[in-house]
Length: 229
Image 1 (tube, rainbow, N blue to C red):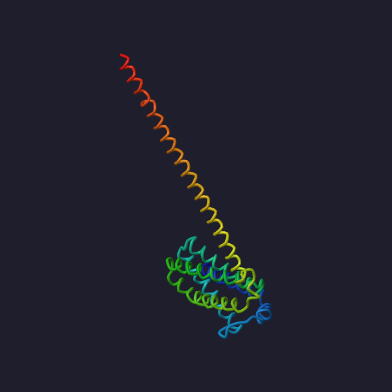
Image 2: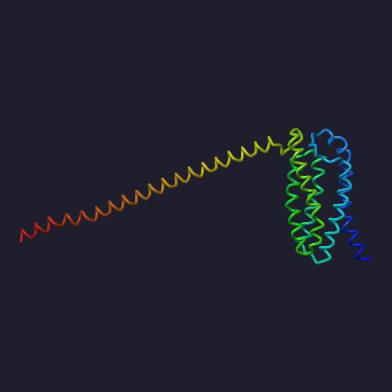
């Protein structure tokens, strides 16, 4: 009974969260999403529900297998992180209409999910294999998100190509300005050090000439004294 309940919780948690997010964006899927330009290979809307139901279920079973086999904080922590990133994508895309942030989120999700699969494999290879279809679908979703992002510049949001280019240009200009300032200061320091070194050298030469002068001045006196004797 305890084992069945733990499996139910592991599977039910991502499923319930996914259903909740799906309900919250349903109006936007039927409305705003229809206005976007999409590629010819964009799948029909009805397929997403069954696919994500299967993927969330497999995801839950995989996490349960890792937990059962003593998976520690790292694999289960990564699992939790990727689940949060997964659930964040839909509100960013459908509710906030921030295609740029949605693209950034799903790109980062691919990295975290890949790390999750690696860590799951160390605990339970079977659990890692259960996540492979999820990785494949997420890769497809990332490509679809990128294509929609490119085709709809008005809906790219804060991370639009224009804003990214402007930010990149500003960052480049600031970096070049900072590099120029550092170079100028380095040159000034070099020149100051050279001036100090030259001054020290001149002082040393003057001191050397000053030491020689009294010795040379003694010789006439010595000669005079000898003649007087």
